[in-house]
Length: 88
Image (spheres, rainbow, N blue to C red):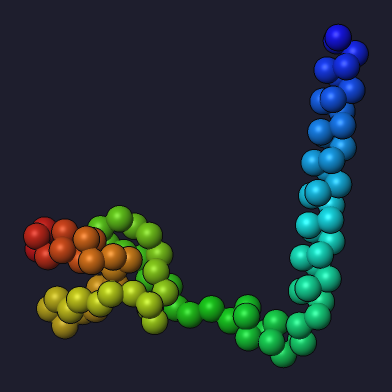
């Protein structure tokens, strides 16, 4: 009985390792198929600003913005923007 369980555990381990290897292989193949130009575009990121309430960094292009005393503040969510309004 014990040898059966050990063999079963080894079988699952081998199958899991094969799955990981195949997944990584196909991810690498698909990333090689993109042109260098499109890869360069994917690497370019926007400017990140820190949410003053929760501390998460958010992309300026997708963040919620609130102005206070002429300064822009960037928020990850409407909840953080509301909390900031209550603080100040």
